[in-house]
Length: 196
Ligand SMILES: [Zn+2]
Image (spheres, rainbow, N blue to C red):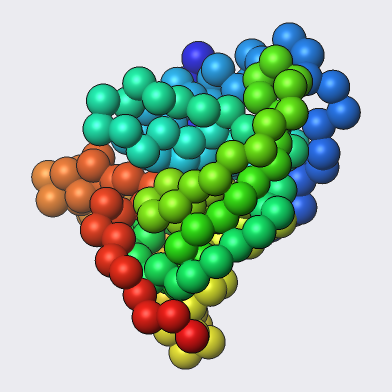
């Protein structure tokens, strides 16, 4: 089942998610729906708060074929290394892409959708994607990671677009529609940033 994706400034996106106590049928069902929703929106990652559930569940799939969907329950970063700067977007902040700095490599611990614990490494786009989704579990959006000046400008733009006729215009025009359709959670153009 495809779930409605909550968009900025929906307050649910700002609430820290709580840990999943038991990976049961309800969690598996939500995870399956999250994957379906992510694929339908052409995203490469989705966190439960984005579909209105304050639970620590994320799903990711950066494969071109969209056939390597993974669910991570109660994910946690154990180690991280390096710096990677890449352009990111978010299904909850449609149409906006900004450069964000993340760790280039991470080691994570999580439960799979059967409730089994595992430890995995991720690098490049997958590492970026997981870090982006983990932020959602803390109520953090990628726009929070931009400079103060850039963030204030964007906030005004986003809120203006939402409140005025500008939004309707964008939606009804072919340009608005096509711009909205191919959004991916994180851009594929991730480049190696400078370590510091
Ligand atoms: Zn996002």
